[in-house]
Image (cartoon, rainbow, N blue to C red; front, top):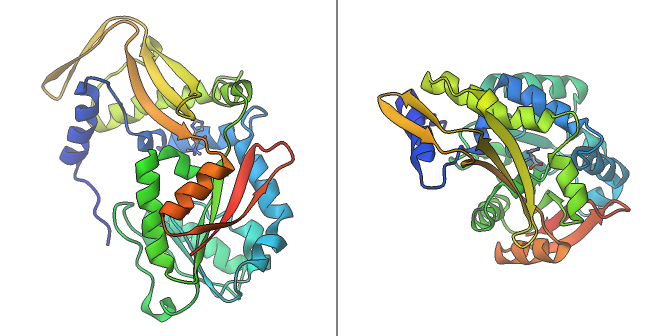
Length: 310
Ligand code: AVJ
């Protein structure tokens, strides 16, 4: 089941990133309580198109998506959190069971109970586990048709090779005849992307800087968020948003017996958010043992919801 890191292991992993030649902080440190609230705010910004665009595709295309999926199936959602997005599809898909997985056991339990109450006909089977562990499907559901639901372009946070490994795992999980519903943000005009990650209200900046507050809690350090600046730029060649925290001056900190220094203008990497073309999604799907069955997009081709057939 779950294998959370000990505090010492977690501190060591963070320090390793801060002592690397190219300093980095794992993007999972965006999401403490405050960070999750900030992300919620991001999803409501005019400039941040992915969340509302995906929602509209899921709502408008629910019946089309359902046409490709067998009724009374098992829908598995890795990193399901609030379990909100599956609701756009539940009536149309009419699965037998929904298996949301998340690291946060308590939050997951609450979300699962809310869903159970709203959909009395649905069997909700929450699985609290670490992301590094394979998702365990209850024995009683193993022989049913299985589909993975992975919305939000969360796959964009993986390096391409890791995205491939993840899809291969999902392919194995659903088995022959199963499939996957995958939300992926699309490669597009640089200005639109730039605005989405450099919003005028500074919410994304606060979200990025909050990682320092979060790791301060874990390390007992006192990184001064006033002395860092949010940077987000689109790398057109690599088709990814790159986010960094830039040190505004030379800084030195004593952390757990180590001395950490930041040069003026030094960048600490915090996130990659890869954008794909439909062709790229098709190639990735195939390498993972799926075939791209269908892609639904919005009228402006900002975002895609894809059905991958196992
Ligand atoms: C949750 C990973 C999809 O990449 O757009 C939002 C996170 N980072 N603004 C994304 C994020 C900066 C988001 N994902």
